[in-house]
Length: 271
View 1 (cartoon, one colour):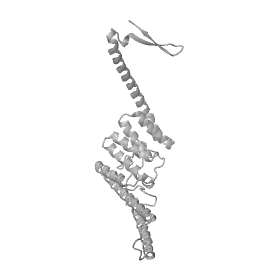
View 2 (tube, rainbow, N blue to C red):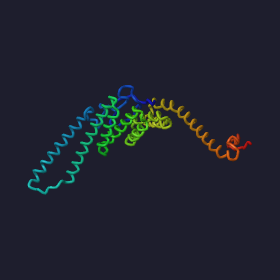
View 3 (cartoon, helix red, strand yellow):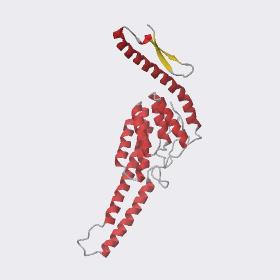
View 4 (spheres, rainbow, N blue to C red):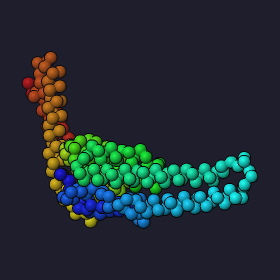
């Protein structure tokens, strides 16, 4: 099991740090105490965002009242392009708040080991979150959190898929690399797990735990490579015997001999 990091909370933009999963209840999970959408946000309930939205709406109401005073008696007044742009921005802001609330609810369900329900909340957050730069963080976190839910459920292929989506949004997301690496190891994809640990070291060269994971995984990868090579040779041998058997021969009649001077091989036939 890949263990590379020990922390419970996420920065707004996950930065290079020691990677891994915690041994406590959160397992390195982004809990409701994380910074979700900005450094000025109340991480527990998104209160600062709501406060900003109220201020924004108040400013818009004042702006609208001023326009109405200036344009009284004009029944044909049309919504300007600026008004439309502002309304669209308000909708995106509300959607972002809803997505954050769904993510926080998912975190609570995860801590209660209600992984299926948590998955539903994270999916809801992903569906609601608007496709804009300010939503990249919450979408990457929700994909990674879905990945750790699947990890807990033993659905390692799904963990790999979700963490890959998280990393497409944020290539330096260390926790997503840790979780994907752990899922790869569970699937005995040792080469892929090593690649994830090496990526962590690229982000944080001082990460000793990632280095230790690589040293532990490399012998496992070597054993698997040797096993795969033996299986491939056995299959080729069976195929060769089925063909040569028609002529009363087998692959055992052929032997590869290496030239000590050139290192090249020649095949000799033994009756």
